[in-house]
Length: 126
Image (cartoon, rainbow, N blue to C red; front, side):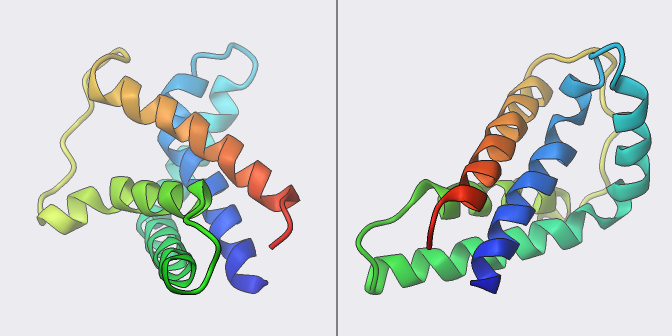
């Protein structure tokens, strides 16, 4: 029960962290989301680890014991990898290019998907 809640919250938080460049373009919400990103950005790796561990746990449970693999754990693993990618590669994060295009746009859209999946997970019984 707690692991499912951790997975859902990690999906929502990591989705917010990934989607900030896209959501910052909303006129009334852009400033607040940018401040949230600036304060939560240094802790993004913690959210990534929680998403990766909880998603991996449920992936193993559903492969060996459960009815089937659900999209909640797959999204959790993918957002965990996306947030931890720079630490996995051992490189410093490069400055993002101005504007939203290419890989940044894809990650932002995936962040929106992760937010929806996390909210859906909160209302789905275990």
